[in-house]
Image 1 (cartoon, rainbow, N blue to C red):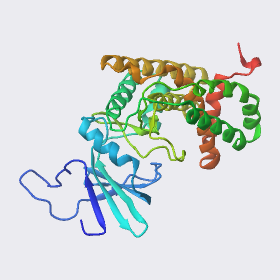
Image 2 (image 1 turned 30 degrees about the vertical axis):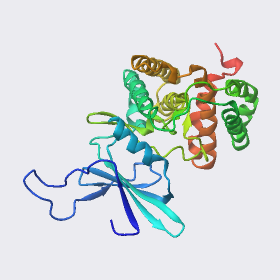
Image 3 (image 1 turned 90 degrees about the horizontal axis):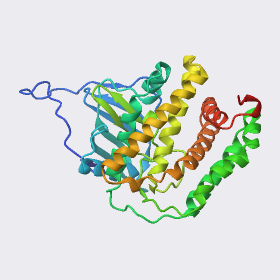
Image 4 (image 1 turned 180 degrees about the horizontal axis):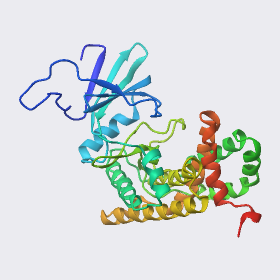
Length: 343
């Protein structure tokens, strides 16, 4: 690459030859994903073989995803879009990441599409696949150098308490009044985070929800290892339960989407979410046991991390996407029903 650009390779790029005996001539066709795809950055498909994600704006180096992608290749984890390369630029202020190049997955749809279809149809068999996928990801990430086994209560509890405070401050109207009336219940749910965390701390995905899991022609793939864009200074090494809690809460959000956008009866959607959540957790546990690493999951952390995640969803809605508020509020209202609503 000409200076001041640099290319970090993870594995060999595919050939763009038109056929085995021929060589490529001309520039492969490029196309965008379309306006229907909600993306923070800008991605193009090149020759129906690779996806180039241009970061807008470019991200300062070191970038969290690069070491993760390189390690996943080394560990043989294949349930992701194949990572090929990263393009960087050296500026006066330092090096920045311009683009990530990964494999194109034919017929791919993200979980906010395919999983809502499953909720509408009442199907939960997929949840076992997601549980095993999440476990395999964590088993691979647990071997990334830097994994620590020592934890502590201060950062986990303080971070969760701040999230609750922000959610209370930013959520207005009737939802805000309802949330304030449940503040004590929510704070009690977060209490387990004040005790020492003894489960191994591993490099987690950091933003693991169904929207990051593609269903494509040949199966499932987890994508986007950039971390959670709504959490500043998040520790990269955390309990696996944090990723798992975000994934399980996203199933409940899918149920809320099915109610609002597909007209699914609320009771049926809630039942679907419970069953799917149970199957996902059972498959996750089973895979860890099968691989001899049940110690990676401390189940006592799932519930408080789920509550913290709902607070973060409310913060995200208030700051970036107000129309999303119905989803976390629907989940919380279902978990803490008003007395007159309880059968």
